[in-house]
Image: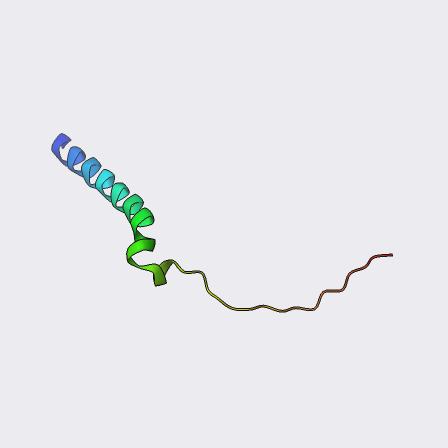
Length: 50
């Protein structure tokens, strides 16, 4: 049982390192996946300044 828990903890740590690495290296390697949607939004605004 202890062997299984050690293996599970190892995989969880490995996944966490992978996610952090993807967050830092991902925008360099996959820039389109991390790009914000470019869309112009125009809405009328009524200001109530008396």
